[in-house]
Amino acid sequence: MADATIQLPPDSTGKKLRVFGPLADGSFVEGVAITDANGDQLLAPESPKIAATTSVNLAAGASVDLETPDITTGTTGNLEQVTIAASVPLKAEIKTRDGAAIALRDTVFTSEAHLTQIWRGPNKKYVTQVGGTTRRFRVTLTSLDNIDAADVYVTFFYDEVT
Image 1 (cartoon, rainbow, N blue to C red):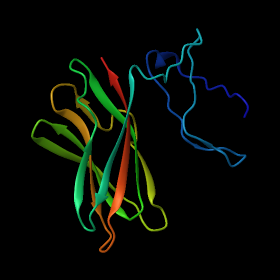
Image 2 (tube, one colour; image 1 turned 180 degrees about the vertical axis):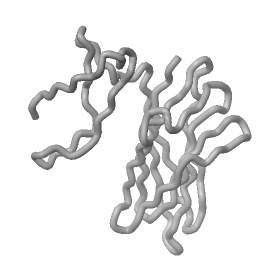
Image 3 (cartoon, helix red, strand yellow; image 1 turned 60 degrees about the vertical axis):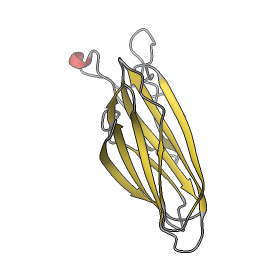
């Protein structure tokens, strides 16, 4: 892949650019390194986190909540991607948790034909959570199968920023 140059307007200082999409050769860009005049990456996460979670033997028709660890106090978590997988179709509700308060942010489904689903928000601040005790990202998975139990998996990709 060749390098490309994007000229940002003079008033773009401190702003970030995020690019996703297909290229002319059929490959797909999931993100690009945008650098400033000094070569520093503008898209580099401040404190990237990955939380891989699983629930074993989720019964047909049952639900389970899978969560990240607490978002660090003094930071804000920005949920950037969630990967959801199982051997049965699922409903996945993307949520934030602030103690007992749960807020639904989005819902996605997997199907027999696509048992893995990758969710990305429209931008990195689409789903945020202020850090603290029991302040987390959550996915509630519901099995849409009426016969088989299955192991289910959720991987959260998020950044904690100050």
